[in-house]
Image (cartoon, rainbow, N blue to C red; front, top):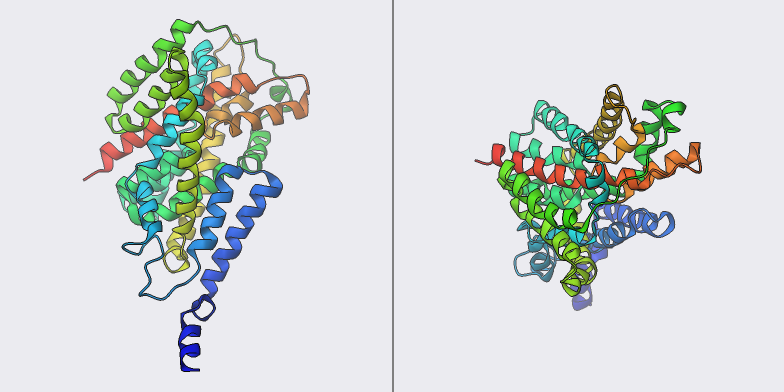
Length: 375
């Protein structure tokens, strides 16, 4: 009986707290949203199951969690804390991304830049609420709706907030179809939503090959801190566009990005142990993240309306909402909202231009913040 009682003391049932139970329930909700609603299932399902795993309590002498020295999960989580996984994700994104829509209409790049306004306004708000400049910079990047960039920057500026920032960033990326449409409809009229845009011009192979080289040189010279992320993004794109490294491009956009996404999502989810995650600071980060994402969406839409004051060929303001770098979900939302008004209005290709520009913009913003905030 003594052995039995000692065993019972080591079980998860004996050590489970209310916080652990709450996080397990949240993890199950994430899994449900991924399966039933198809909200970014490639992200939410690994994160959700990671939350369940990370909140199973164990005795202190057993190294099992991501914060325990010598545990397997800690070694996997090292790819997050060291900033290793985000550049590998960017390599795969680059190998999947077609920049031709952006190159065919370069002025749409401005919408991707405008959407980064959410990052800097949230940074100011976070500092006002008492966060340090480094913490505020890491929180603000959530507004870029780019999970890998948010992880990369928070690992450099505020590693103690990494779990909360990563979960917030990926949560809002998954909820793009829920968050963006009300903002888009609120800021546009029916007449604006019905606007049609001319077909994008054809972009030559030479332009597509030159762009990743020129784009990397320009962007990294402006923000050297973004060199790692942008280097991998544009390298992956060059693998795709050169048409002489098909095997490498195929590996980057399929096997590599899939493996890294599994490890990143699962380990980030496992980092949400209630004892370290459930605190007022994390809740405040979630609130600021929602504000940042909303401001970014609104900034893109409003800037498109501002540009129309000077343009002969008008831009459908809905396209501005795709300036956040949730690729390709934001572009799909633009298409969805536009077709609610006119089923024959195809905005997807136009929306992809600010969408991919937003990926570059958020990485540049992260590089600038790292350069300014680092001590």
